[in-house]
Length: 164
Image (tube, rainbow, N blue to C red; front, side):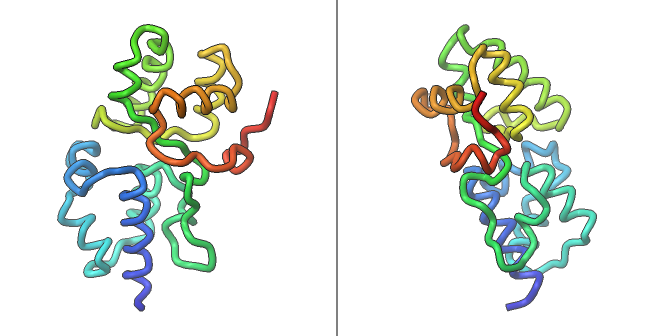
């Protein structure tokens, strides 16, 4: 299998793990990432430059290594991120308003306004826990119970989150 196809398979896996269609990637990126172009990268029909690959990995909220072929597959549980269902969080009401405000600042910073899901890095998870007057572990458990997590978080140690 070609290198481009291997990279494409990794890119597709990351996108699918987040529950995004190609069209949702285009919308969430404000048109920066065209559905047709992402699809051609994923099929291996089109080569992606190293710069664009790094930018796309950042947009998806994953480590560049997660989209590069090699011995290790992309980590399930999103490796260094968790994915939050923003619609579900909104439906939970005012108790989560401070978390929603913080997540909105992340969206503004990234230019990511899809309003459906958002990937959050470990350092943001720690900040969210402080805002929520909780620990990262307790917050993840609570968000899991509330149906806010968009996928399996995996081991918090992998996220760089340790008990407090």
